[in-house]
Length: 293
Image (cartoon, rainbow, N blue to C red):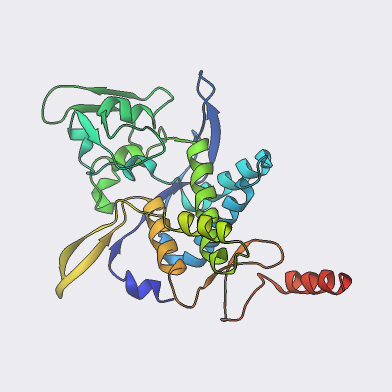
């Protein structure tokens, strides 16, 4: 899978913090946000594609049961954020990233609201629930952001001003959004993996229906002169990067993304015949199989 060649020229750098914590609003809504003393660093998701996808999908597996082991789910999502950063939901759903200069935000389908248009100030409150001073004022620059920027990110990451919020310590993402996103990725992989082997037609149809629900918003490109005119891919959010990379992997004819026949975990296959994520899983599967004979 030559991902690095496919996206050789891209704007995919992302920001993560050394530590995150769960905090609840007075209304009881649980968010994940950087800790006050966390340090900032940069990460490129394209440099660790296999581990990024497998980690995300296997968190999704934990979220699938009707009654998930919530302490484990929370711990795994926290660990994921510490390794890769938050998803960047705030810049995943708007049609344009200049929305902080507008009075209203135009939205694609999203888990936040069923509205397609929302006031900018109200939209920002979804992601700044712990007291950041964000308000709408009249004029060309109608969103005033006070004490949200921890450093001038846009100066060296080639990102628009809205990322000063996304990469700030005040930025937060709701736990339920995170959990739902991870769960959907794993459920979709299951549909792609099992639809062709479903014994009942109704199950096969359900898998196909789930398979065809996948859509993505936000990936764009620009043409830049790099010796010659060159396409540069723009990944506005970590979520967009994962969606894109997952799409490439799951539609590859060699099906590099697999689900272990024994434990159900996602893994990247090293050969076309691989059915298990590890030697112990293969051995345990064969032992259980022999005992049933």
